[in-house]
Amino acid sequence: MKLSVKQLQEKAAELRISSMKMIAGAGGGHLGGSFSAMDILTALYFNVMRIDPANPGWEGRDRFILSAGHKAAAYVPVLAERGYFSKDLLSTFNRLGSPFGMHPDKNKIPGCEASTGSLGHGLAVGLGMALALRMDGLDSKVYVLLGDGELHEGTNWEAAMGAAQYKTANLVAIVDYNKCSMDGPIDTVVSLEPLEAKWQSFGWETVRIDGNDMVQVLAALQDAAARSSSGSPVAIIADTVKGKGAGFAEGDYRWHYGCPSDEQLADSIKALGGN
Amino acid sequence: MAGLSMADIEKMSARDAFGLALAEIGAENDKVVLLGADAIGSTRAAGFAKRFPERTFNVGIAEQEMVSAAAGFAACGKIPVATAYGFLISLRACEQVRSDICYPNLNVKLMSTHTGLSMAEAGTTHHSTEDIAIMRSFANMTIVAPSDSLETVKAVKAVIDYPGPVYLRMGRGETESVYKEDYEFVIGKSVMLRDGSDAAIIACGIMVAEAVKAARTLEGEGISVRVINMHTIKPIDTEAILRAAEQTGALVTAEEHTVIGGLGEAVSGVVCEQHPVPVIKVGLDDCYGIIGPEEGVKEKLGLNAEAICRAVRRAVILKKK
Image 1 (cartoon, rainbow over the protein chains, first blue to last red):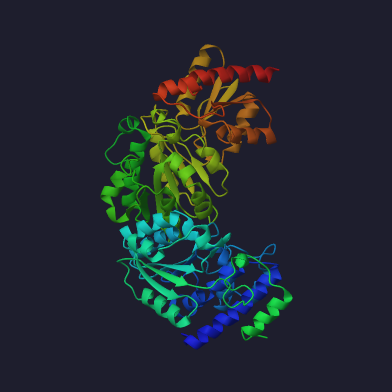
Image 2: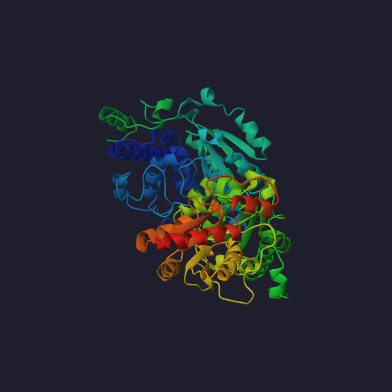
Protein backbone atom coordinates (compact mmCIF):
# COMPACT_ATOMS: atom_id res chain seq x y z
CA MET A 1 0.00 0.00 0.00
CA LYS A 2 1.37 3.39 -1.00
CA LEU A 3 1.50 6.16 1.55
CA SER A 4 0.34 9.73 0.99
CA VAL A 5 2.90 12.53 1.02
CA LYS A 6 1.70 13.48 4.50
CA GLN A 7 2.06 9.90 5.69
CA LEU A 8 5.55 9.72 4.19
CA GLN A 9 6.52 12.92 5.97
CA GLU A 10 5.25 11.48 9.24
CA LYS A 11 7.04 8.24 8.56
CA ALA A 12 10.32 10.09 7.90
CA ALA A 13 9.89 11.97 11.19
CA GLU A 14 9.28 8.71 13.06
CA LEU A 15 12.32 7.18 11.41
CA ARG A 16 14.49 10.13 12.41
CA ILE A 17 13.40 9.59 16.01
CA SER A 18 14.16 5.90 15.72
CA SER A 19 17.56 6.65 14.17
CA MET A 20 18.49 9.22 16.78
CA LYS A 21 17.56 6.89 19.62
CA MET A 22 19.65 4.18 17.98
CA ILE A 23 22.63 6.53 17.57
CA ALA A 24 22.33 7.72 21.17
CA GLY A 25 22.06 4.15 22.41
CA ALA A 26 25.18 3.18 20.48
CA GLY A 27 27.12 6.13 21.87
CA GLY A 28 27.47 7.78 18.46
CA GLY A 29 26.72 7.49 14.77
CA HIS A 30 26.74 9.24 11.42
CA LEU A 31 23.86 11.50 12.27
CA GLY A 32 24.37 14.32 9.75
CA GLY A 33 24.40 12.31 6.54
CA SER A 34 21.80 9.87 7.80
CA PHE A 35 19.31 12.62 8.53
CA SER A 36 19.90 14.46 5.25
CA ALA A 37 19.05 11.26 3.36
CA MET A 38 16.08 10.11 5.45
CA ASP A 39 13.37 11.59 3.22
CA ILE A 40 14.86 9.94 0.13
CA LEU A 41 15.14 6.56 1.86
CA THR A 42 11.60 6.79 3.21
CA ALA A 43 10.11 7.57 -0.19
CA LEU A 44 12.13 4.82 -1.87
CA TYR A 45 11.26 2.07 0.57
CA PHE A 46 7.64 2.99 1.30
CA ASN A 47 6.37 4.18 -2.06
CA VAL A 48 8.75 3.72 -4.96
CA MET A 49 10.70 0.47 -4.86
CA ARG A 50 9.16 -2.80 -5.94
CA ILE A 51 10.14 -5.02 -3.02
CA ASP A 52 8.76 -7.78 -0.85
CA PRO A 53 10.32 -7.68 2.63
CA ALA A 54 8.86 -11.12 3.37
CA ASN A 55 10.82 -12.46 0.39
CA PRO A 56 14.02 -10.40 0.24
CA GLY A 57 15.53 -12.64 -2.46
CA TRP A 58 12.61 -12.25 -4.90
CA GLU A 59 14.15 -12.15 -8.35
CA GLY A 60 12.02 -9.35 -9.73
CA ARG A 61 12.73 -6.91 -6.93
CA ASP A 62 14.30 -3.51 -7.34
CA ARG A 63 17.76 -3.17 -5.86
CA PHE A 64 19.05 -0.47 -3.58
CA ILE A 65 22.70 0.16 -2.78
CA LEU A 66 23.70 2.45 0.04
CA SER A 67 26.95 3.50 -1.58
CA ALA A 68 27.49 6.07 1.15
CA GLY A 69 27.52 3.20 3.62
CA HIS A 70 27.91 5.44 6.66
CA LYS A 71 24.27 6.45 6.25
CA ALA A 72 23.43 3.05 7.77
CA ALA A 73 22.05 4.89 10.77
CA ALA A 74 19.17 5.91 8.49
CA TYR A 75 19.09 2.76 6.34
CA VAL A 76 18.85 0.20 9.14
CA PRO A 77 15.79 1.78 10.83
CA VAL A 78 14.12 2.08 7.41
CA LEU A 79 14.66 -1.63 6.69
CA ALA A 80 13.32 -2.53 10.12
CA GLU A 81 10.28 -0.28 9.74
CA ARG A 82 9.62 -1.80 6.32
CA GLY A 83 9.55 -5.24 7.92
CA TYR A 84 12.82 -6.87 6.87
CA PHE A 85 13.61 -7.62 10.52
CA SER A 86 12.40 -6.76 14.00
CA LYS A 87 12.71 -3.20 15.24
CA ASP A 88 13.80 -4.71 18.55
CA LEU A 89 17.16 -5.37 16.92
CA LEU A 90 17.86 -1.65 16.44
CA SER A 91 19.14 -1.36 19.99
CA THR A 92 21.97 -3.76 19.08
CA PHE A 93 23.45 -1.27 16.57
CA ASN A 94 27.28 -1.35 16.76
CA ARG A 95 27.24 -3.95 19.53
CA LEU A 96 29.12 -7.23 19.53
CA GLY A 97 27.22 -9.84 17.54
CA SER A 98 24.79 -7.33 16.00
CA PRO A 99 23.88 -7.82 12.34
CA PHE A 100 24.58 -4.14 11.78
CA GLY A 101 26.64 -1.18 12.74
CA MET A 102 28.15 1.85 11.09
CA HIS A 103 28.40 0.28 7.62
CA PRO A 104 26.07 -2.41 6.22
CA ASP A 105 26.98 -6.06 5.56
CA LYS A 106 24.86 -7.72 2.87
CA ASN A 107 25.33 -11.16 4.33
CA LYS A 108 24.04 -10.14 7.74
CA ILE A 109 21.20 -7.69 7.04
CA PRO A 110 18.05 -9.04 5.37
CA GLY A 111 17.22 -6.82 2.39
CA CYS A 112 20.72 -5.37 2.08
CA GLU A 113 22.06 -5.83 -1.46
CA ALA A 114 25.69 -4.74 -1.10
CA SER A 115 28.28 -4.47 1.65
CA THR A 116 29.41 -0.88 1.59
CA GLY A 117 31.31 1.62 3.65
CA SER A 118 34.38 2.48 1.66
CA LEU A 119 33.22 5.22 -0.68
CA GLY A 120 33.09 5.07 -4.45
CA HIS A 121 32.11 1.43 -4.87
CA GLY A 122 28.33 1.41 -5.04
CA LEU A 123 27.72 2.95 -8.46
CA ALA A 124 29.94 0.43 -10.24
CA VAL A 125 28.41 -2.48 -8.30
CA GLY A 126 25.00 -1.08 -9.26
CA LEU A 127 26.07 -0.89 -12.89
CA GLY A 128 26.91 -4.60 -12.83
CA MET A 129 23.52 -5.35 -11.29
CA ALA A 130 21.70 -3.17 -13.82
CA LEU A 131 23.41 -4.95 -16.70
CA ALA A 132 22.74 -8.41 -15.25
CA LEU A 133 19.05 -7.65 -14.59
CA ARG A 134 18.54 -6.21 -18.04
CA MET A 135 20.25 -9.24 -19.59
CA ASP A 136 17.69 -11.44 -17.83
CA GLY A 137 14.84 -9.41 -19.24
CA LEU A 138 13.83 -8.06 -15.83
CA ASP A 139 12.59 -4.48 -15.62
CA SER A 140 13.95 -4.02 -12.09
CA LYS A 141 15.62 -0.76 -11.21
CA VAL A 142 18.86 -0.32 -9.32
CA TYR A 143 18.93 2.74 -7.04
CA VAL A 144 22.29 3.89 -5.72
CA LEU A 145 22.47 6.50 -2.98
CA LEU A 146 25.70 8.46 -3.13
CA GLY A 147 27.06 10.99 -0.70
CA ASP A 148 28.31 14.27 -2.11
CA GLY A 149 31.79 13.99 -0.64
CA GLU A 150 31.86 10.46 -2.01
CA LEU A 151 31.93 11.93 -5.51
CA HIS A 152 35.54 12.94 -4.87
CA GLU A 153 36.36 9.27 -5.50
CA GLY A 154 37.26 8.79 -9.16
CA THR A 155 35.65 5.37 -9.38
CA ASN A 156 32.23 7.03 -9.47
CA TRP A 157 33.17 8.68 -12.71
CA GLU A 158 34.48 5.42 -14.17
CA ALA A 159 31.07 3.91 -13.44
CA ALA A 160 29.28 7.00 -14.74
CA MET A 161 31.05 6.61 -18.09
CA GLY A 162 30.30 2.90 -18.17
CA ALA A 163 26.60 3.44 -17.46
CA ALA A 164 26.34 6.02 -20.24
CA GLN A 165 28.12 3.68 -22.66
CA TYR A 166 25.81 0.79 -21.82
CA LYS A 167 22.70 2.98 -21.58
CA THR A 168 21.56 1.56 -18.27
CA ALA A 169 18.47 3.69 -17.76
CA ASN A 170 17.56 1.11 -15.11
CA LEU A 171 20.37 2.51 -12.96
CA VAL A 172 19.39 5.52 -10.88
CA ALA A 173 21.99 7.57 -9.00
CA ILE A 174 20.79 9.75 -6.16
CA VAL A 175 23.24 12.29 -4.75
CA ASP A 176 22.56 13.35 -1.19
CA TYR A 177 24.01 16.82 -1.69
CA ASN A 178 24.17 18.10 1.86
CA LYS A 179 27.16 20.30 1.03
CA CYS A 180 29.37 18.93 3.77
CA SER A 181 32.14 16.38 3.88
CA MET A 182 34.01 15.26 6.96
CA ASP A 183 36.59 18.05 7.08
CA GLY A 184 34.24 20.92 6.37
CA PRO A 185 31.76 22.51 3.98
CA ILE A 186 32.44 20.69 0.74
CA ASP A 187 33.18 23.86 -1.23
CA THR A 188 36.05 24.57 1.17
CA VAL A 189 37.42 21.04 0.77
CA VAL A 190 37.04 20.25 -2.94
CA SER A 191 33.99 21.66 -4.70
CA LEU A 192 31.81 19.45 -6.87
CA GLU A 193 30.43 22.32 -8.88
CA PRO A 194 29.13 22.50 -11.49
CA LEU A 195 27.66 19.19 -10.35
CA GLU A 196 24.73 18.84 -12.72
CA ALA A 197 26.90 19.76 -15.68
CA LYS A 198 29.42 17.13 -14.60
CA TRP A 199 26.84 14.34 -14.69
CA GLN A 200 25.41 15.66 -17.94
CA SER A 201 28.83 15.76 -19.57
CA PHE A 202 29.25 12.11 -18.53
CA GLY A 203 26.12 11.24 -20.48
CA TRP A 204 23.56 11.26 -17.69
CA GLU A 205 20.26 13.08 -17.48
CA THR A 206 19.90 15.04 -14.29
CA VAL A 207 17.05 16.17 -12.13
CA ARG A 208 17.64 18.66 -9.35
CA ILE A 209 15.34 18.65 -6.37
CA ASP A 210 15.07 19.70 -2.77
CA GLY A 211 15.89 16.34 -1.23
CA ASN A 212 14.14 17.18 2.00
CA ASP A 213 10.87 18.13 0.30
CA MET A 214 8.80 14.95 0.13
CA VAL A 215 6.70 16.15 -2.79
CA GLN A 216 9.79 16.74 -4.92
CA VAL A 217 11.57 13.60 -3.70
CA LEU A 218 8.60 11.42 -4.52
CA ALA A 219 8.05 12.95 -7.95
CA ALA A 220 11.69 12.58 -8.99
CA LEU A 221 11.92 8.99 -7.78
CA GLN A 222 8.62 8.01 -9.42
CA ASP A 223 9.79 9.50 -12.71
CA ALA A 224 13.03 7.53 -12.47
CA ALA A 225 11.09 4.36 -11.64
CA ALA A 226 8.96 4.78 -14.74
CA ARG A 227 11.93 4.83 -17.14
CA SER A 228 12.62 1.95 -19.47
CA SER A 229 15.68 -0.25 -19.01
CA SER A 230 17.64 1.24 -21.87
CA GLY A 231 18.57 4.85 -22.47
CA SER A 232 20.41 7.54 -20.59
CA PRO A 233 20.76 6.83 -16.90
CA VAL A 234 19.45 9.51 -14.58
CA ALA A 235 21.12 11.23 -11.64
CA ILE A 236 18.89 12.88 -9.09
CA ILE A 237 20.83 15.68 -7.48
CA ALA A 238 19.08 16.15 -4.17
CA ASP A 239 19.91 19.35 -2.33
CA THR A 240 19.64 18.46 1.32
CA VAL A 241 20.54 19.80 4.72
CA LYS A 242 23.07 17.86 6.76
CA GLY A 243 21.43 16.72 9.99
CA LYS A 244 17.95 17.68 8.69
CA GLY A 245 15.40 17.29 11.47
CA ALA A 246 17.92 17.47 14.30
CA GLY A 247 17.92 21.20 15.05
CA PHE A 248 21.25 21.14 16.88
CA ALA A 249 23.01 19.52 13.90
CA GLU A 250 21.41 21.09 10.85
CA GLY A 251 23.93 22.40 8.33
CA ASP A 252 26.86 21.68 10.61
CA TYR A 253 29.59 19.53 9.01
CA ARG A 254 30.87 18.59 12.48
CA TRP A 255 27.79 16.38 12.86
CA HIS A 256 29.14 13.95 10.27
CA TYR A 257 29.55 11.70 13.28
CA GLY A 258 28.49 12.32 16.84
CA CYS A 259 26.32 11.46 19.78
CA PRO A 260 23.43 13.67 20.82
CA SER A 261 23.21 14.65 24.49
CA ASP A 262 20.16 13.59 26.51
CA GLU A 263 18.81 17.11 26.14
CA GLN A 264 19.41 17.24 22.39
CA LEU A 265 17.74 13.87 22.03
CA ALA A 266 14.70 14.91 24.07
CA ASP A 267 14.34 18.26 22.26
CA SER A 268 14.64 16.66 18.84
CA ILE A 269 12.14 13.91 19.59
CA LYS A 270 9.69 16.57 20.72
CA ALA A 271 10.33 18.71 17.65
CA LEU A 272 9.81 15.67 15.40
CA GLY A 273 6.43 15.05 17.01
CA GLY A 274 7.45 12.14 19.18
CA ASN A 275 7.37 11.61 22.87
CA MET B 1 38.75 -28.98 -26.21
CA ALA B 2 36.82 -29.27 -29.42
CA GLY B 3 39.04 -30.20 -32.33
CA LEU B 4 42.29 -29.64 -30.45
CA SER B 5 44.74 -32.28 -29.36
CA MET B 6 46.89 -32.10 -26.26
CA ALA B 7 49.81 -31.43 -28.55
CA ASP B 8 48.00 -28.40 -30.01
CA ILE B 9 47.31 -27.01 -26.56
CA GLU B 10 50.87 -27.68 -25.41
CA LYS B 11 52.15 -25.29 -28.04
CA MET B 12 49.96 -22.44 -26.88
CA SER B 13 50.63 -19.71 -24.38
CA ALA B 14 48.64 -19.93 -21.16
CA ARG B 15 46.58 -16.92 -22.15
CA ASP B 16 45.70 -18.44 -25.53
CA ALA B 17 44.69 -21.64 -23.77
CA PHE B 18 42.63 -19.55 -21.37
CA GLY B 19 40.87 -17.81 -24.24
CA LEU B 20 39.95 -21.07 -25.92
CA ALA B 21 38.73 -22.64 -22.71
CA LEU B 22 36.65 -19.59 -21.84
CA ALA B 23 34.92 -19.50 -25.21
CA GLU B 24 34.09 -23.17 -24.84
CA ILE B 25 32.71 -22.63 -21.34
CA GLY B 26 30.61 -19.76 -22.68
CA ALA B 27 28.81 -22.15 -24.97
CA GLU B 28 28.10 -24.56 -22.11
CA ASN B 29 27.13 -22.09 -19.41
CA ASP B 30 25.05 -19.03 -20.22
CA LYS B 31 25.57 -17.60 -16.74
CA VAL B 32 29.17 -16.79 -17.60
CA VAL B 33 29.73 -13.15 -18.52
CA LEU B 34 33.00 -11.54 -19.52
CA LEU B 35 34.26 -8.22 -18.22
CA GLY B 36 37.32 -6.59 -19.68
CA ALA B 37 39.18 -3.34 -19.28
CA ASP B 38 40.36 -2.52 -22.78
CA ALA B 39 42.56 -5.61 -22.83
CA ILE B 40 40.14 -8.23 -24.10
CA GLY B 41 42.47 -8.81 -27.03
CA SER B 42 45.69 -9.13 -25.12
CA THR B 43 44.22 -11.24 -22.32
CA ARG B 44 42.97 -13.47 -25.17
CA ALA B 45 39.37 -13.36 -24.02
CA ALA B 46 38.44 -12.15 -27.49
CA GLY B 47 37.18 -15.57 -28.57
CA PHE B 48 34.45 -15.38 -25.95
CA ALA B 49 33.74 -11.75 -26.81
CA LYS B 50 33.29 -12.60 -30.47
CA ARG B 51 30.98 -15.53 -29.86
CA PHE B 52 29.00 -13.94 -27.03
CA PRO B 53 28.98 -10.17 -27.54
CA GLU B 54 25.76 -9.85 -25.52
CA ARG B 55 27.59 -11.32 -22.54
CA THR B 56 30.73 -9.23 -22.94
CA PHE B 57 31.26 -5.91 -21.19
CA ASN B 58 34.32 -3.85 -21.92
CA VAL B 59 34.45 -1.01 -19.40
CA GLY B 60 37.53 0.66 -20.84
CA ILE B 61 40.68 1.30 -18.86
CA ALA B 62 38.87 1.20 -15.53
CA GLU B 63 39.81 -1.94 -13.61
CA GLN B 64 38.27 -0.76 -10.36
CA GLU B 65 34.93 -0.26 -12.06
CA MET B 66 35.31 -3.65 -13.73
CA VAL B 67 35.84 -5.49 -10.46
CA SER B 68 32.98 -3.69 -8.69
CA ALA B 69 30.66 -4.30 -11.63
CA ALA B 70 31.64 -7.98 -11.52
CA ALA B 71 30.42 -8.01 -7.91
CA GLY B 72 27.09 -6.61 -9.12
CA PHE B 73 26.79 -9.31 -11.78
CA ALA B 74 27.55 -12.02 -9.23
CA ALA B 75 24.99 -10.59 -6.80
CA CYS B 76 22.41 -11.12 -9.56
CA GLY B 77 23.35 -14.76 -10.13
CA LYS B 78 25.82 -14.45 -13.00
CA ILE B 79 29.32 -15.93 -13.07
CA PRO B 80 31.41 -12.92 -14.05
CA VAL B 81 34.91 -13.47 -15.39
CA ALA B 82 36.86 -10.25 -14.91
CA THR B 83 40.01 -10.11 -16.98
CA ALA B 84 43.06 -7.86 -16.83
CA TYR B 85 46.79 -7.96 -16.29
CA GLY B 86 47.69 -9.29 -12.86
CA PHE B 87 49.08 -6.08 -11.44
CA LEU B 88 45.93 -4.19 -12.37
CA ILE B 89 43.58 -6.62 -10.66
CA SER B 90 45.74 -7.07 -7.57
CA LEU B 91 47.08 -3.56 -7.13
CA ARG B 92 44.81 -1.08 -8.93
CA ALA B 93 41.59 -2.85 -7.99
CA CYS B 94 42.85 -4.27 -4.71
CA GLU B 95 40.21 -2.70 -2.49
CA GLN B 96 37.41 -3.62 -4.87
CA VAL B 97 38.60 -7.24 -4.79
CA ARG B 98 38.71 -7.24 -1.03
CA SER B 99 35.59 -5.28 -0.11
CA ASP B 100 33.23 -5.84 -3.05
CA ILE B 101 34.03 -9.49 -3.77
CA CYS B 102 35.82 -11.29 -0.94
CA TYR B 103 34.05 -9.68 2.03
CA PRO B 104 30.56 -10.54 0.69
CA ASN B 105 32.00 -13.83 -0.70
CA LEU B 106 30.67 -13.34 -4.23
CA ASN B 107 31.10 -15.78 -7.09
CA VAL B 108 33.50 -13.67 -9.15
CA LYS B 109 36.33 -15.14 -11.20
CA LEU B 110 39.33 -12.86 -11.51
CA MET B 111 41.38 -14.14 -14.39
CA SER B 112 44.67 -12.34 -14.65
CA THR B 113 47.22 -12.66 -17.40
CA HIS B 114 50.75 -11.33 -17.94
CA THR B 115 51.55 -12.21 -14.33
CA GLY B 116 54.93 -12.54 -12.67
CA LEU B 117 57.70 -11.30 -14.93
CA SER B 118 56.08 -12.49 -18.13
CA MET B 119 56.12 -8.91 -19.39
CA ALA B 120 59.64 -8.39 -18.11
CA GLU B 121 60.62 -5.94 -20.82
CA ALA B 122 57.62 -3.77 -20.00
CA GLY B 123 59.22 -2.78 -16.73
CA THR B 124 58.34 -2.94 -13.07
CA THR B 125 55.02 -1.11 -13.39
CA HIS B 126 53.81 -4.07 -15.46
CA HIS B 127 55.22 -6.86 -13.31
CA SER B 128 52.81 -8.81 -11.11
CA THR B 129 55.09 -9.95 -8.34
CA GLU B 130 52.98 -9.20 -5.26
CA ASP B 131 49.60 -10.51 -6.41
CA ILE B 132 49.74 -13.85 -4.61
CA ALA B 133 50.63 -12.15 -1.33
CA ILE B 134 47.79 -9.67 -1.70
CA MET B 135 45.19 -12.23 -2.69
CA ARG B 136 46.29 -14.70 0.00
CA SER B 137 45.54 -12.17 2.68
CA PHE B 138 41.87 -11.93 1.74
CA ALA B 139 39.52 -14.31 3.52
CA ASN B 140 37.25 -16.31 1.19
CA MET B 141 39.72 -16.03 -1.71
CA THR B 142 40.99 -19.01 -3.70
CA ILE B 143 44.21 -18.68 -5.73
CA VAL B 144 45.10 -20.91 -8.65
CA ALA B 145 48.35 -20.66 -10.65
CA PRO B 146 48.51 -23.30 -13.39
CA SER B 147 51.88 -24.51 -14.59
CA ASP B 148 51.35 -24.82 -18.33
CA SER B 149 48.78 -24.34 -21.06
CA LEU B 150 47.17 -27.74 -20.60
CA GLU B 151 46.73 -27.14 -16.92
CA THR B 152 45.39 -23.67 -17.69
CA VAL B 153 42.56 -25.18 -19.73
CA LYS B 154 41.69 -27.51 -16.87
CA ALA B 155 42.04 -24.75 -14.29
CA VAL B 156 39.76 -22.32 -16.15
CA LYS B 157 37.03 -24.93 -16.27
CA ALA B 158 37.48 -25.91 -12.63
CA VAL B 159 37.49 -22.29 -11.51
CA ILE B 160 34.16 -21.58 -13.21
CA ASP B 161 32.58 -24.50 -11.36
CA TYR B 162 34.20 -23.65 -8.02
CA PRO B 163 31.99 -21.53 -5.75
CA GLY B 164 33.22 -18.19 -4.44
CA PRO B 165 35.91 -15.68 -5.38
CA VAL B 166 38.87 -17.07 -7.32
CA TYR B 167 42.05 -15.42 -8.59
CA LEU B 168 43.50 -17.32 -11.54
CA ARG B 169 47.10 -16.40 -12.32
CA MET B 170 48.42 -16.85 -15.84
CA GLY B 171 51.47 -15.68 -17.72
CA ARG B 172 51.80 -14.12 -21.10
CA GLY B 173 54.11 -16.20 -23.24
CA GLU B 174 54.34 -19.81 -24.21
CA THR B 175 54.71 -22.19 -21.31
CA GLU B 176 57.10 -25.03 -21.06
CA SER B 177 55.01 -28.14 -21.04
CA VAL B 178 54.83 -29.92 -17.69
CA TYR B 179 52.20 -32.51 -18.48
CA LYS B 180 52.61 -34.97 -21.26
CA GLU B 181 49.46 -36.90 -20.53
CA ASP B 182 46.02 -36.25 -19.22
CA TYR B 183 45.33 -36.13 -15.49
CA GLU B 184 42.67 -34.99 -13.07
CA PHE B 185 42.81 -31.37 -11.96
CA VAL B 186 41.19 -30.64 -8.60
CA ILE B 187 41.35 -27.21 -6.98
CA GLY B 188 43.16 -27.51 -3.65
CA LYS B 189 44.84 -30.81 -4.49
CA SER B 190 48.46 -30.62 -5.59
CA VAL B 191 50.07 -32.95 -8.12
CA MET B 192 53.27 -34.90 -7.40
CA LEU B 193 55.13 -34.88 -10.70
CA ARG B 194 58.17 -36.80 -9.50
CA ASP B 195 58.89 -38.65 -6.31
CA GLY B 196 62.09 -38.26 -4.33
CA SER B 197 63.45 -38.81 -0.85
CA ASP B 198 66.16 -36.20 -0.13
CA ALA B 199 64.16 -33.02 -0.63
CA ALA B 200 60.95 -31.75 -2.18
CA ILE B 201 60.44 -28.78 -4.45
CA ILE B 202 57.02 -27.21 -4.15
CA ALA B 203 56.39 -24.87 -7.05
CA CYS B 204 53.59 -23.03 -8.80
CA GLY B 205 53.04 -21.50 -12.22
CA ILE B 206 55.90 -21.54 -14.70
CA MET B 207 58.36 -22.40 -11.93
CA VAL B 208 57.01 -25.95 -11.97
CA ALA B 209 58.77 -26.65 -15.26
CA GLU B 210 61.96 -25.19 -13.78
CA ALA B 211 61.54 -27.43 -10.74
CA VAL B 212 61.30 -30.51 -12.94
CA LYS B 213 64.48 -29.51 -14.75
CA ALA B 214 66.22 -28.90 -11.43
CA ALA B 215 65.18 -32.32 -10.14
CA ARG B 216 66.68 -33.97 -13.22
CA THR B 217 69.96 -32.12 -12.75
CA LEU B 218 70.08 -33.00 -9.08
CA GLU B 219 69.38 -36.63 -9.83
CA GLY B 220 72.68 -36.65 -11.69
CA GLU B 221 74.35 -35.44 -8.50
CA GLY B 222 72.78 -38.24 -6.50
CA ILE B 223 70.12 -36.07 -4.85
CA SER B 224 66.65 -37.54 -5.07
CA VAL B 225 64.05 -34.77 -5.29
CA ARG B 226 60.28 -34.85 -5.18
CA VAL B 227 58.48 -32.22 -7.30
CA ILE B 228 55.05 -31.01 -6.30
CA ASN B 229 52.96 -28.78 -8.50
CA MET B 230 51.12 -26.63 -5.99
CA HIS B 231 48.73 -25.16 -8.53
CA THR B 232 46.35 -24.01 -5.81
CA ILE B 233 48.04 -21.65 -3.39
CA LYS B 234 44.93 -21.04 -1.33
CA PRO B 235 43.48 -23.20 0.11
CA ILE B 236 46.86 -24.90 0.17
CA ASP B 237 47.26 -28.68 0.12
CA THR B 238 48.44 -29.07 3.71
CA GLU B 239 48.51 -32.85 3.54
CA ALA B 240 50.92 -32.96 0.60
CA ILE B 241 53.21 -30.41 2.26
CA LEU B 242 53.33 -32.32 5.54
CA ARG B 243 53.89 -35.60 3.74
CA ALA B 244 56.80 -34.04 1.86
CA ALA B 245 58.21 -32.57 5.07
CA GLU B 246 57.98 -35.90 6.89
CA GLN B 247 59.28 -38.04 4.04
CA THR B 248 62.07 -35.81 2.69
CA GLY B 249 62.91 -33.48 5.59
CA ALA B 250 63.87 -30.53 3.36
CA LEU B 251 61.68 -28.25 1.28
CA VAL B 252 62.33 -25.71 -1.45
CA THR B 253 59.59 -23.49 -2.80
CA ALA B 254 59.68 -21.80 -6.19
CA GLU B 255 57.46 -19.00 -7.41
CA GLU B 256 57.61 -16.18 -9.92
CA HIS B 257 56.73 -13.73 -7.19
CA THR B 258 58.27 -12.00 -4.21
CA VAL B 259 59.22 -14.41 -1.42
CA ILE B 260 57.20 -12.19 0.91
CA GLY B 261 53.69 -13.48 1.38
CA GLY B 262 53.63 -15.92 -1.50
CA LEU B 263 53.77 -19.68 -1.94
CA GLY B 264 56.97 -19.98 0.10
CA GLU B 265 55.45 -18.35 3.13
CA ALA B 266 52.28 -20.39 2.74
CA VAL B 267 54.34 -23.60 2.78
CA SER B 268 56.52 -22.33 5.63
CA GLY B 269 53.42 -21.53 7.63
CA VAL B 270 52.21 -25.10 7.35
CA VAL B 271 55.49 -26.77 8.31
CA CYS B 272 56.35 -24.28 11.06
CA GLU B 273 53.16 -25.13 12.86
CA GLN B 274 53.01 -28.85 12.26
CA HIS B 275 56.34 -30.37 11.22
CA PRO B 276 59.29 -27.95 11.19
CA VAL B 277 61.91 -28.65 8.51
CA PRO B 278 64.13 -26.26 6.53
CA VAL B 279 62.26 -24.35 3.82
CA ILE B 280 64.33 -22.39 1.28
CA LYS B 281 62.31 -19.95 -0.78
CA VAL B 282 63.14 -19.27 -4.42
CA GLY B 283 61.53 -16.08 -5.67
CA LEU B 284 62.16 -12.36 -5.81
CA ASP B 285 64.22 -11.54 -2.76
CA ASP B 286 62.27 -8.51 -1.53
CA CYS B 287 63.00 -6.56 -4.68
CA TYR B 288 61.29 -5.45 -7.88
CA GLY B 289 61.67 -7.04 -11.25
CA ILE B 290 63.99 -5.50 -13.79
CA ILE B 291 63.68 -4.69 -17.48
CA GLY B 292 64.97 -7.05 -20.10
CA PRO B 293 64.16 -10.17 -22.05
CA GLU B 294 62.29 -12.62 -19.81
CA GLU B 295 65.00 -15.31 -19.71
CA GLY B 296 67.81 -12.93 -18.85
CA VAL B 297 65.74 -11.23 -16.20
CA LYS B 298 64.87 -14.54 -14.56
CA GLU B 299 68.45 -15.68 -14.56
CA LYS B 300 69.60 -12.44 -13.01
CA LEU B 301 66.91 -12.57 -10.34
CA GLY B 302 67.39 -16.25 -9.52
CA LEU B 303 64.13 -17.54 -10.91
CA ASN B 304 65.22 -20.60 -12.86
CA ALA B 305 66.22 -24.24 -12.52
CA GLU B 306 69.78 -23.33 -11.58
CA ALA B 307 68.63 -21.21 -8.67
CA ILE B 308 66.32 -24.01 -7.56
CA CYS B 309 69.25 -26.47 -7.65
CA ARG B 310 71.30 -24.18 -5.43
CA ALA B 311 68.40 -23.91 -2.99
CA VAL B 312 67.93 -27.68 -2.85
CA ARG B 313 71.62 -28.27 -2.12
CA ARG B 314 71.42 -25.76 0.73
CA ALA B 315 68.25 -27.32 2.08
CA VAL B 316 69.78 -30.79 2.10
CA ILE B 317 72.83 -29.50 4.01
CA LEU B 318 70.60 -27.64 6.47
CA LYS B 319 68.56 -30.69 7.37
CA LYS B 320 71.71 -32.64 8.23
CA LYS B 321 72.81 -30.03 10.76
